[in-house]
Length: 340
Image 1 (cartoon, rainbow, N blue to C red):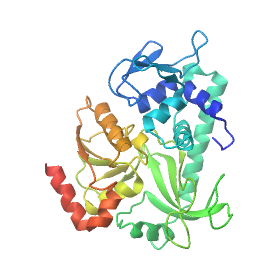
Image 2: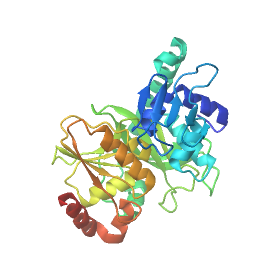
Image 3: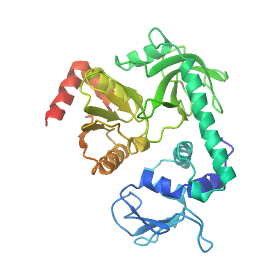
Image 4: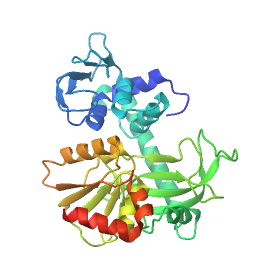
């Protein structure tokens, strides 16, 4: 997706993936024929809001109506209401992130379009693998400076650094270079295959996150996958977090636990756990999006036999807790919560 894509085109793309959209953002709903039924725009259990999967009787795929309130619209409108976004730009950014990770359903597209979409996805994954392979170890780099500034001491082979990563459609505020140093994070599936690479662009002068419209970007396939950090102990337990820094903040305080970072609240709710996991600690951010994502994941895993427990920060996220309380303080709080 590029900055030249119109709102109408994004809406049409979302409509083509209506069922995938519904399962991602409204997991408490259920399918009824050509529709997805859910309670309201927040995603509550119910049947008053219906979302159309396929074009029917002149009505476009992705159209929705809430019969309890009379509201209606397309999937951009629905996503805007669901996220509680402050601006249309914020909603469109989330929509484009979703579209970059949600394949078109085969039954809704021609074989040629399906082949093209599959080839494009394979190309993105191949590019992600090449980028991560070109990275260097994090220690002694701007990436290490960035993580240390945030109190993080848990690294691992899933992280690398690259001094010059290409920027498309966005530039540093201080100069117009189309390259920037970046922290790279390897996204993998449950078999260990690399499916993507997350990039956190950094300011080489300050060692802080770069001043960009979108300093964090994902290349490849994230849906259901994660950035993983293994400790070698507690193999039946897994801490599943949202953002990379927040997950690593928990890992800094609890080095004996295995970690999986889903990078965004939306993908937090879509995570697919590996086999052998008996208990998942869902480490969410302390906001509405984090709460919804945690509930979605817990609901999805409810029938899997995996025990789900929630970890909620005292402040906005676990990195804020780490910076405020220190490694020992956060460790004590987390262990107490786990025993509760």
